[in-house]
Amino acid sequence: MINPSNGMISTSSTSANTQSPGLKTYFKTPEGRYKLHYEKTHPSGLLHYAHGKTVTQVTLANIKDKPAPSTLTAPPSGFSAGSGVRSAAARLLGTSNGSRGLSFAGGNGGSKSISSSSGGSSGNGSSSSSSSSSGSSRIGSLGTSSSSNSMINSNFDGKGTYLIFNVGDAIFISDLNSQDKEDPIKSIHFSNTSPVCHAFDQDAKDGHDLLIGLSSGDVYSVSLRQQLQDVGKKLVGAHHYNKDGSVNSSRCMSIAWVPGGDGAFVVAHADGNLYVYEKSKDGAGDSSFPVIKDHTHFSVSHARHSKSNPIARWHICQGSINGIAFSNEGAYLATVGRDGYLRVFDYSKEQLLCGGKSYYGALLCCAWSKDAKYILTGGEDDLVQVWSMEDRKVVAWGEGHNSWVSGVAFDSYWSPPNSEGTGENVVYRFGSVGQDTQLLLWDLEMDEIVVPLRRCPPGGSPTFSTGSQSSHWDSVIPVGTLQPAPSMCDVPKLSPVVAHRVHMEPLSGLVFTQESVITVCREGHVKIWMRPGASESQPSNSETISSTSLKEKPLLSSKIGSSTYKQ
Image (cartoon, rainbow, N blue to C red; front, side, top):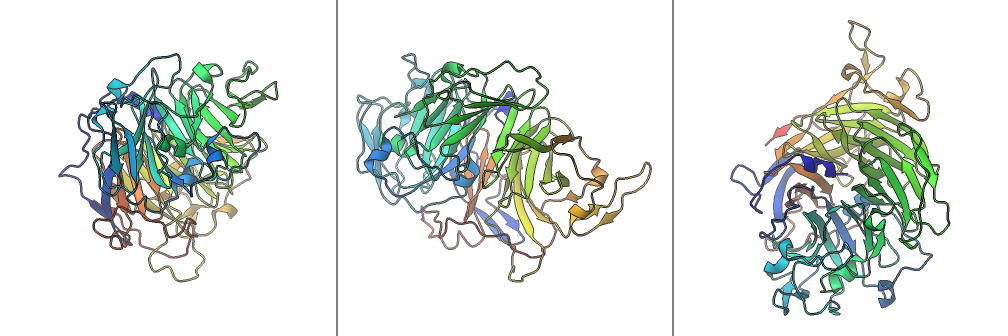
């Protein structure tokens, strides 16, 4: 996940256009060229006081077929939600939204019609400076003004793929398949607070599929389709949790749906606490937890009342929790924090399994491989570490960034070129982005990296061997052990296969999809890079990033070169 606390490092940007003559519109990889397809950003007039104080995160949301109208009502007490962490939703791409028009209120109280195929202009009224702060609710208004708060576009079914990103005090929702750069079809502004993190549940059975965590600690759940159908100024049908920081007033740092959790979600805060919520319960219910006696140790407390929400508090660490990530099936939860530790928990057992420290400074982001065998971490030591769940140790580290690593992700769609053989060497492709404005791609081939047989003796050299790393460790690590950073001479080093400067501003995250790689900078500019072959298959004026399958490709076997493509 992206570290919102990076907002303390100030960078200035007065232009919404991130393109520069010094930036190439493609980068080379062993399998071919990735080409810049188009960009997305916020309206150019947006310069809010909160701009630069928060870091943009991006979520992809794929809305399926139009449901029955009853799904837009309040959620029932019993329903089933499938895998819904943001990383899972982000891997999904839908079909084109076609030429459907969406009407929304303009600045003069009338309406404008935006067609995703005609590339209509965005309303000038979307500047956050015009947002309303009336009322006691923390929900602000849309930047545009409207004479009606309940107008519904009944012809808009909402089906398609949307890009959700936060900038300053606003959430913007853009049609991913429209190539109009400054074309958010919806903007929601918040009063006296800023959105920090968000997550989408692809398989939510009721209307509430989008979570938004705020700098004030407040959390909202809403129906994304309902927000798109409504042309009013505020969030529609929102459920409010931790209202006015009643449970925890510290900043929301990361938020995620629990895969297969029947609508459960978790929120990580800047004070080192993580809370478990159930969206079917009243967010205003009484929730009080005992005083934390030892802030240095992991502890779990459950709510005293059955109707309380949140239902549990996990005290993870001292200082901020900078990022969280669930494994694909939801069995494990990984967290990274200001104290520099990765922690891995058995979620259902509420048990700390393992973890370890960075080489220097805080860890800012983490991500799971699809098979839950490996975890990536990145942070202030400028390195990418690969953790093995089997060995509960770091099995590789990557050097290539020149500044803090702010985003990591496995590319579960990638397969090596000419990978038609049935060899046993499994290759994992993953990516990282950093404040050095670079995107790095890496290949992890476990049978090709060298693995230490034993630790370096004083003044000596390590002994290395190829093959499975699991048989070479000296001893089994006890459950719950947080390990110090290993000596670098004990851990194999990786070099990136691609290093490319993709933005002018420091980067804050990346998402892999079936046909593209999406990068986002902290200032709110998003770029979509089409995979080799994908752009050729698209018409030159295409507005569609289509997905022929919503299922991920399995990891394939191959050996590839280790040369680095510098851009």
